[in-house]
Length: 179
Image (cartoon, rainbow, N blue to C red; front, top):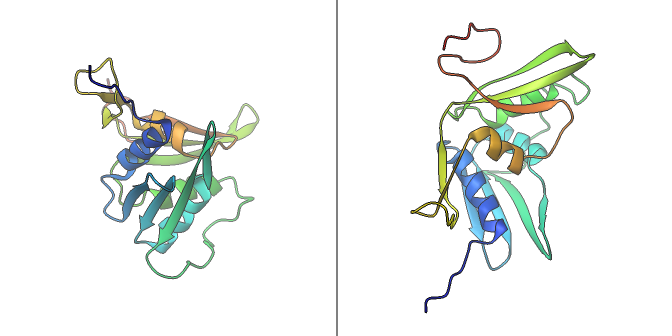
């Protein structure tokens, strides 16, 4: 009888991060299974800095700790000065920088005054994302999901930051929705 071996959760995290950035020519994700290390090589210094802030340094999976390291192409970049951490547009700027030239991001917008606080909406392309995950309910072992779901899994949680999917024919907030 054949042995059934399912993908461990740290491999799922790798697959999600890789799916999020597979269309970005400046980001390359590499997994070292032996060392439980995920390396994110980034060609753009500002994008690397934004990803260093947005991605966790470690992710816990029971007794396994996955180390996530963002590696810029050259020396460490200077601090990103476009917006301060105290700005209400801080996360909007970080996500726009992290996803510069990545077609999965439609927009990131900060909306002021919703229920007395500002909210940052990170809006992803309306597209089914598939990656191998030993999914027993799929004949090919694939997981099918949305970018917003992956983003909620891979990025650090921040108050007031929400991930969503653009409706068809809509490129972000402030545009007329046409169904």
